Length: 154
Image 1 (cartoon, rainbow, N blue to C red):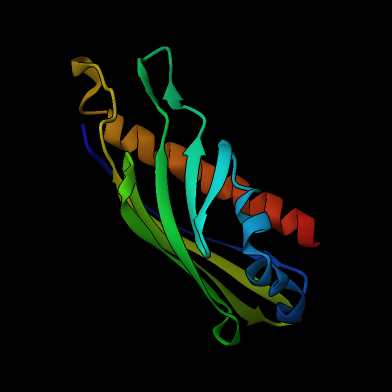
Image 2 (tube, rainbow, N blue to C red; image 1 turned 60 degrees about the horizontal axis):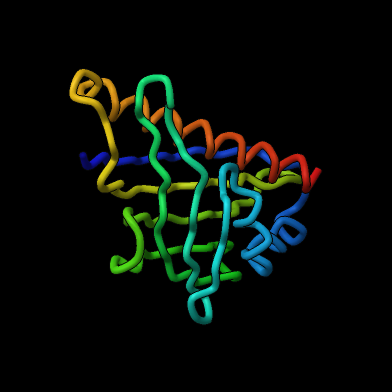
């Protein structure tokens, strides 16, 4: 089964943009903070293969080990980290961006991601509820990532 995901979340950080910009400069370390990331493999400069621990519910028989590759580009003057999928790797295509915006003495850290998960094993009786369940699970992973990133910067 194919499942589309789309998540847009943000968090305010008390640190100024100049300090938060280190997230972009060392984006590999930033990526490694993402929950359920089992392994991150450099494929070539600025391109990584993500391998995640199973996401879902083993009880319901919905557990998917997401694997995908993306090429990253940093635009520090715009406070932007973007990634585009490398579609020939894994069982998903995921793209997104992380954007830093000044907010008073602090920074708003925005995270947008969208993509498609392929070959998600879902029992027939759960096919209607699986997409919103998986979307909710990804949203929670992004929330945890942003919270951990905020806490590391504060």
